[in-house]
Length: 302
Image (cartoon, rainbow, N blue to C red):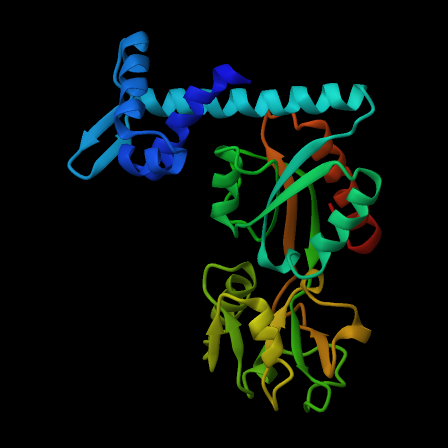
């Protein structure tokens, strides 16, 4: 709605931290944008930005205002979605923050399934692991989060958690390829391809290694699981991934996925949920229902 537009300008300034750069992004002049800010500050009776030598930063009043703007925009999206649903149009937009494991296989399939029934619904998918996912919800950048082993979720309403066993990914001719499960110390006898520390799989592996009074020494590290799993097909190399991040067994293409023994590395938890006390737009709520139904059919869950 038109009355929200000037307020969205403030969100852009707060995100970029510069009136000049925000004006470029918004295709208006810096002086015009500054006048809008000054007029709003006069109306509120308080400044909302600290003017710094190299830009601007929200003060406490500004933080309150930006939170209000984001909440209002989110509520308007929900109202639009509900009205469209009443009219039978089934329009809407769904924004998702998720761990990397959800990107290659699970979410593309789920989005295609949803859009086959609701083709007017659009999606945005943001890679956000652990603490970044909660920030995305708080800033209304995302409606739903699907995160493996989050660091904290104080403002998170959990719809479901599912257990995911960490798997060693190896070539089919690897010495460990025919095992039903594998111990962590056995994996350490071979070259390791590991994700970086912020990721949930690495967190579980490092925590387990510390508990076993050992340390993992990766030959290769990366923030791309697809890159790492590709190395799982290299001679004697071992990569790691959770089941939701792997293709079906017949599509592993010369690789095998072997669960790590739970005595060494217990299963991690994959969370799906949304911001606490937020009512999701109709489209997002229905997609969340689809996700939880799929999880319930495939995995052990709470």
